[in-house]
Length: 206
Image (cartoon, rainbow, N blue to C red; front, top):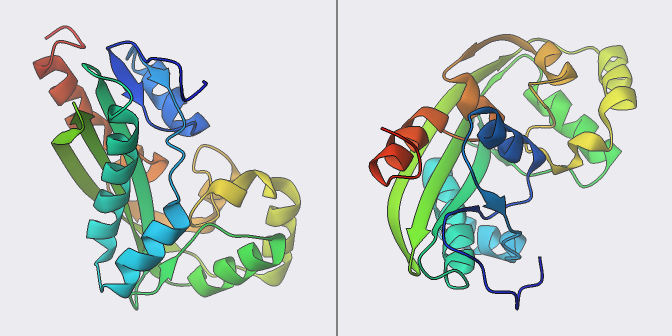
């Protein structure tokens, strides 16, 4: 969508994420999707330099996206989302920038657990009116070099936009021995709390 085009009221997803759009579609949530076009990398670097926690980082980035689009869409509810992966020693993983970088991330995750924080923020009229952050704990089995190579043969470059290098709705499920937490959170959105709020606001039928 052209940034100069006025956005109509309703629910707007401040993202072009295919997985988040699919989740809303599957749940029967009417919406339109608009790219937030924020400098996420610079914002993330600044927040991390300030010592922000992984949980609060996901919340801040989700809010940044929601507010950016909300200023273009008076009267609309704008949903911003973000996911952050933190290894068990606190190391934050970003989206891989190359196949080799993805392989490095998978080696770092192998045989360890990480926390996946998924945040959702709704903005209205240029201010945040609702937010929720959920955590899932992901236990990665020990990954062989052969598996990593075969996995990336199948999944790269599709996982280039995925923090953690996996799509749980696809072969990414093979990385794990077990998971703790909501499947929706793992996919990138705390869906049930979001649906509750959308019913309160009349977007969905109570």
